[in-house]
Length: 138
Image 1 (spheres, helix red, strand yellow):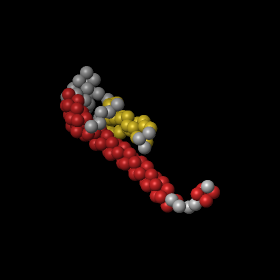
Image 2 (cartoon, helix red, strand yellow):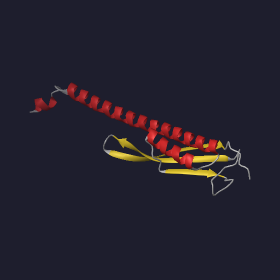
Image 3 (tube, one colour):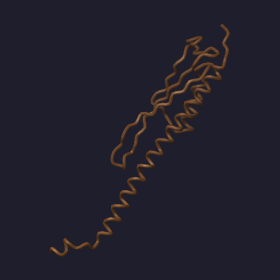
Image 4 (cartoon, helix red, strand yellow):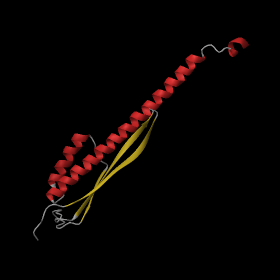
């Protein structure tokens, strides 16, 4: 029995199995990280396009809501929160005067899928600012 325990036969196989296992875990980690980077890039695109629509229109209205639905379908991102921060020229119509700052913050809850065993919730935020490009007569 002592000879079997002290024997080195099969050590190479165990090293290969452990090496392959570690390589697979590293590959899963890299893929999950890359996925989060792609989601962040899509969020930036989503935010910039939505803000572009609002600045060209000079208001946060129906065109912005339509574009938001298009972007949600196009990117597959359904944000947790979309917050506008601006000074309205006419608050009831949500119009923004030429040259006024429009700030958009988009928040999305993503999960980092940790090796198939656990999920780590991550909050991704995209925040961009632009100026209104439409003049409203008072």
